[in-house]
Length: 638
Image (tube, rainbow, N blue to C red; front, side, top):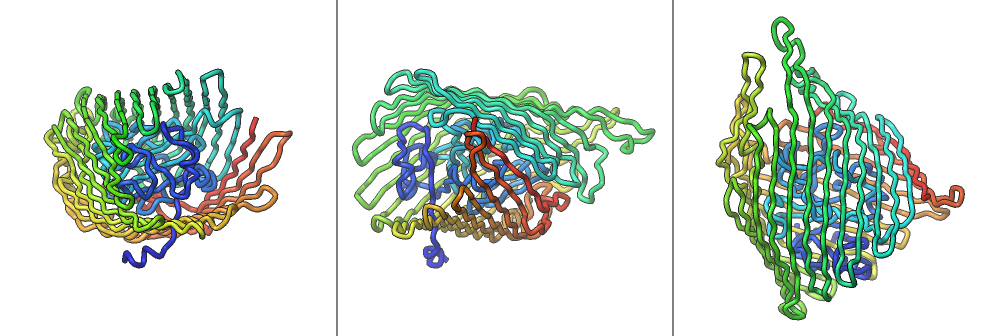
């Protein structure tokens, strides 16, 4: 398998970051620099993990309006929708609708939230237009980013206020109720650079599901240069709006205990970071952030559920928040040896009266270290570990080591080893989901309070080859993961209790290819072959497509025209939890755009069609049918 993979081309491309110590030349180099793999700035061929970078050019050319859809461009990723406003994003499957085994960071801020875990993608106070690039770690990375960086890490880096000036407005209208707006203004005043955004997104979701969303948002970021070495970075954001909820049932009939209704969601964050860049390779930072999310969901059961048409109130609201303080320092011991170390304290809190009893708090602490040693010109060693303490599960250690050997300037082999944990989320650990309907109690889920962390041991062989004369880079990977103490519930009868019941093995191969054919034409291709063994108590072996692929082409035409298309193909899959067996599908998406001047202002109009061939297929469950969707985006600089 590896011999075949080595002859398939791929390239990665990266845009400019506002992270400390990275210059524009780093990102214009043939082998791009990544920031997330080890917390050190490293070329991709010297990173300890397999990496994928989605740059601003790819984001724009994709035409995607939902952030989650961008991960269709990453090998091994499974992207689906539990409903129209709840994407499911996972690496190598192993996920229900909450994707608890993936870590997601936005500018270093974890948005993997209590009490249920996972990421509420639709309520994040950012839009696709706010993203500069995305770095994806394909594989466990708890040594760098802590527990819950179990299957992989998504690191989203937003646009730098220093690099944007002036205003831009964009509107989007299309089928299925699509109606989005985005207004951005960026400027500077002395040592202060700032960026302000207001936005709105809406659509009607799937035809047979009550999943309409109407979300308004605003965010702001600012950089203030204290002096030549010190920088303060501020960021805050807020979103709020309505989302349709209600379980239509597998046969399309309404569940009287979970009827169609509107809920209200809010999300906000505040973040401040101090950075000191003393000299090349010696940086210090202190990061503090607060993250808050709330779901307001009060409703009445339908009269058909009980005799005499009795109805009962249900409060399914959930509130979660996080306070996080982190210190980090990187320094060079010698020209051949670099370190980064630090520590953090965190407090997670949640109130969810239907699901758990009282307000729950979960303090945690962690320290980390990573070292990079150039043993020789050809041989590089990466090693690191994260030591964590959690109130519910105690101490855990997550080590990682990788050995990179440069066969020559353009070819590198990587041998990687890592162990990682996923701490049980509050709902798994402390669940007490009992419906109280008058004099009747209906118990559904219980948490034992003594769950152990899930564990994974990962081994990989990676190969990166650059063909600069052809504009090609090849990235291939063979991996083997063993999972233990997997958390699941007894079943299928209710009430169900969470426990460490499961184990599974996952092995396979991946490749990613990008070909810069010319300055006007780029081609990206991804392929993944995934085999999971393990079917108790969950159908882990069906939770990832055996084979999946994507092909992404972009071309700039004369006279301001641009065109792109994306072809995705995945095999049969059945997600965990309420996921149903979904047949494999192929899908074509395309975008045609033209830039022009509108009253002396730069403008662009783009036409996007998803599922161009109008071949309906289902997402996550059979009722979620996705057919052809089209929309138009108009952007104007002001």
